[in-house]
Amino acid sequence: MAKAPQPPTPKPAPTPVAVPTPDRRVLLIVGGGVAAYKALELTRLLRKAGVGVRPLLTKAGAQFVTPLSLSSLAEDKVYTDLFSLTDEAEMGHIQLSRSADLVVVVPATADLMAKAAHGLANDLASTTLLATDKPVLMAPAMNVRMWLHPATQRNVATLKADGVHIVGPDDGAMACGEFGPGRMAEPAAIFDAIMGLLAGEASRPLAGKHVIVTAGPTAEPLDPVRVLTNRSSGKQGFAIAGALARLGARVTLVAGPVNLPTPFGVDRVDVETAVEMLTICQGALPADAAVCVAAVADWRPDEAFGVKLKKGREGPPTLRLVENPDILATLSASGPRRPTLVVGFAAETNDVIANARAKLARKGCDLIVANDVSEAGVMGGDDNTVVIVSKRGVDKWERAPKAEVAARLARGIAESLQ
Ligand code: CTP
Image (cartoon, rainbow, N blue to C red):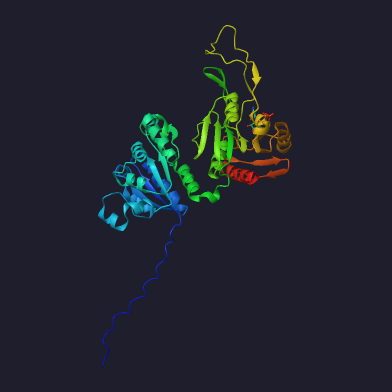
């Protein structure tokens, strides 16, 4: 008898591919501001680094980016509603607020910051910020007047006192057409801040140490509108300040006039002249280390005129210059208040090592980081080639991005302070 046709044997179910669970996760609150689009790029950077992103989009945020964009990049569901029955069934808002290692608010609008500062909880984002027991990082973004308003500044001070970490805002042109502080930090800077916070204490060998960093040029006034200055961009000094802060140091960055955002976690004091730079550095002592990267003007006009110099019949004025104080040499010779480690920089075009050795002895510092500025693209560029010269010897580093030079130097400083 013919056999009844058998149903086809079902194919074995494919073995489920284990999706690796990220061991670090951030809860990303996206607020309602034009800068919300940068939250997408930040999400991409975090996912690329293997960090899990659980997005929470406010109603106002959804006016600027769509839940679909956010969830596609985050590879996770987007939470939006405090009173969503399904969300509450799957994950209550209290659990959501604790489901990550870090809560990040990008952009942190004036409204979100005000709510968080005052403990309001009338939507999912503010409730989450009140309920969380995890560290919080905010990246403020708002119009310059809103940022400078005393109410916002009060709220920022309250949030900082509550232990909230703040990255930015930067100075710059804004979507509203105005210019000034209030523009959100770039995604790369927020990413660095997040990675630093996620890394935790083990990666903070400089915790409890204070480091003074000088950076940028100085500008020496001739009259109210004219200055003597130089082309230093400040990039290397700012990168070093940021790298030291990432290793846990309390960093006082004394900066000449540059147009650079303050690295995350760094206390910045802006100055104009060499004399001001020295005063601030001395006032910032005691310190465990000082890193003098600034291109300090060697001389300043003997007299700064109170009114603008006019073209006259006598022809061009003759400038009389006087020598500026040497900040590196002064800090190296500050007796009992001398930092344990004093690092100087030297921009050289020739005989790099011999000149650096001579400078080490002349300035009385412990280390000279000499860079060969005869190489194309070093001055103002993003790369640097440096030689480390100390009493112990000479170490030539390969050409590398300034951020890498900064990170390596910061690690070296941490080692020698231990
Ligand atoms: N420096 C300083 N204060 C000054 C001049 C320089 O702190 N008034 C510091 C710089 O920050 C840098 C180091 O000294 O760390 C080397 O600066 P540089 O200008 O190269 O050294 P000079 O002593 O001016 O030597 P020269 O210009 O002859 O090369």
